[in-house]
Every structure is written in structure tokens, then in C-alpha cells.
Image (cartoon, rainbow, N blue to C red; front, top):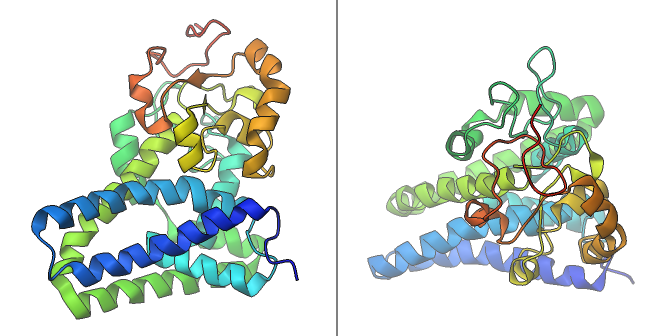
Length: 297
């Protein structure tokens, strides 16, 4: 019987997701015994791994669920919700809106289709300041609005998302009951991890062109980054063909590379989280022309 729904390579992010969950349990177990420096290192590792999981494992899972048997996908979704501390079903629908708007600019009413758009809280058509986007985005989530959006489309998914929220809240409450000192130590790293994810998300679109489908995203072809982050670097390609499996992104890039060049698709050298080190970083967030210069309007 076929277990993996799309590719044999999905076993890798699947196993990584399981190991990530057990890492959290190990972190909890060693807390009373490990020296402070090891705990800090484990906390920072967890912070980075949140961004790694959200942008690699969880992201690919919501587009193309790994398993053929739906209850197993539900189980994996619950486990990911516990590991990352938010509902994967809610994330799925927020991310679908992200692809509806593709980091669009506000309309005449000041609204964006994409709730994650880097322009949503910006001024004068520019992207929001990177620091406020990183540190405030996690606090801006509106669970009621997300629930209403999901319920309108799929009521069963809406209530499943509530179950996932209840599961990770109970998981964290249990953590406080068993060792409140660990949880107080753990939560800042949890928050930092989500901030790192928003840092990554900011530069996935900063300098892109919201008006051209082939240039909606910003790509990085850094080999180690794409190997570890399951081809998350091919982000312009992903927005151009969002349902395409992560293992096929490189082939898609090769097919459309010339068109991307003509349309000015932005490419950076470092991984997205380090995009501020890229020598072509634009001073403004307006689209780039083919030579990489800011288009003046």
C-alpha cells in the first residue's frame, strides 16, 4: 500500500518533523540536569528550528500533505501544532490567503488580501519596517478572523483547528504544571523562533514585484540553505506554481529562468534570513528592474 502521497523524498521532512517534536520533549527532560550554557544552546537551536520547520516542513506539508491516509496527516498536523505552538490548520488557511494576495499592497480601503503582506502595515506603498514586521507580526494574529474565514470555506477544518489550538494550549499548561521554571525559560525562545520565521518571511518578498506573477517572490539558490530548508529558497518559483512539489522547484527554475530574468525576478545570494547581507538589497521596497535597480514611480 502506498504511504507517501507525492514523493519518496517526503520521508525526509516527515521524519524531521517527528524528530523536532521529540527534541522539545528532550529539551524539557534535560532541563533540571543540564548546565545553563547547554540549555541556552538548546533554546537557540529550538528558535532556529521553528523557522526551519515553518518554512520547510510545515510549509510543504500544507501544500502537499505527505501521507495518503488522512487520519495520519491529521495526526502529523497535531504533532506539528504541539511542536510549533500554533494550529497548523489555521496556518494553512492564512497561507492560502498569502497566495491569494502574494504580499499585495493595500487597496483603496487600506486592506490587503494577504494577511502576511509586508506592505499591510507599511506607509506610502512601501514595505513595513523590518523590525516591526519581525517582532509584532506574531502578536497581530486574529484567531477569530481566521476561524471565521475557515468556517466559511470548510466548517470541519475550522473546528479541527480549534482542536489543535486546545491541544497545544493543554500541552503548554501541562508543561507549567510539571516544571514551571522550564516553561518560563522556554517561552522566550519560542517567541524568538517565530520572530525568526517572520524575518525569513519578510525577505521572501522584500524587493519583489507584487504586480508580476513571475516576480511575486524573491529567490535564493544557496545550495546548503535549499538542502536544509527543503527548497524554500525557490520562492519566486513557488509563488508562480504554488502546488508544485518542493522536489521539482529546481527543474521549474531551469524552465523559466530566462523569463524570470526578463521580468526582473529578484534573486539574492544568501539565505533569506540573511538577506540584509546581500549587496543588492534595495533601499526602497518598490519593484526592481532587470538590472536590479529600484524602479522609480
